[in-house]
Image (cartoon, rainbow, N blue to C red; front, side, top):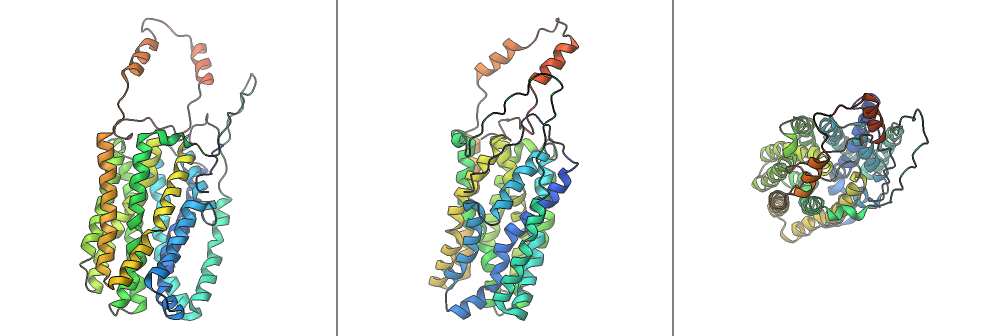
Length: 412
């Protein structure tokens, strides 16, 4: 399943923040691009599928929902590349992690810009069956990128016995004791109910307005092109020293912005209005994509990230399996696209309120006992410490890789 990702990396290694990490970042960029762009790009085939099989919008929406649910919750297919690549990326980057996550997340819009018009072109020349076959062949490039994921190796001890490696559980359910994780998981599950609905239906919406197929598919290219710049920018801003402690609130704002865009986009009645909607949706969607895993890492820390991301994606898989088909059911019943966009916007707005209110009212207080313990163990200022003792202490207590120091702003 999505949560069954075992993070067996050594805990005593400092994240290199570069080196081979750039190769890992490139691999994660390609894998993320295929993983997120492909389920949206196949929406260009929906009209053809509806004509051939005589089905409705809710039936075709199941295609994207099942693809995303497989990615999130089952651990099969693209998930075998996607989730481990995220874990490897967060092992190789610590100080530059927000920027690295933003650049890796930019793979989604870059590939969406390419796959959407390519899918329409393949359908025109080879039909939807031939298009699926060629796109499936392109997905095999993820196997090459997976070969770039090298595990970090711990330095060999110069003397003394090698300490035994601590046993790791396949799935660490102790993250549910963290109120911050529970609030994040609730907000993320509500968010994905509506987050993927507009990209799935916007092409069909344009075609129903009488827009030519090529121009309708171009809407996803516009969305993806704006998203390309939004994700790295959001990652760079989040990485700033004064902004990073408030990443949870920035993530809440991006969700609110996305939901508001859906509500205003429901008023679009022509192709120009849909283009404007795609521009603002690309900005807000890029912010969400760049911040979601960075915020999760800030909440749970490096050592529990593998279990946390697996559990969150599993919960999101259930929600994403409901979101687009429910929008399709609403569309089949009303034949009004505006209602679908309003429903999606309301769901994303609700998720932003859950996260920001939960973070505000459930901030983890620093216990006074812990402060007293630190004061009690603080070394006297007038005592000299021999350099050999310092060296022995550093060897005995290696710094954990990329462990995030929790602050009231990053721990809900």
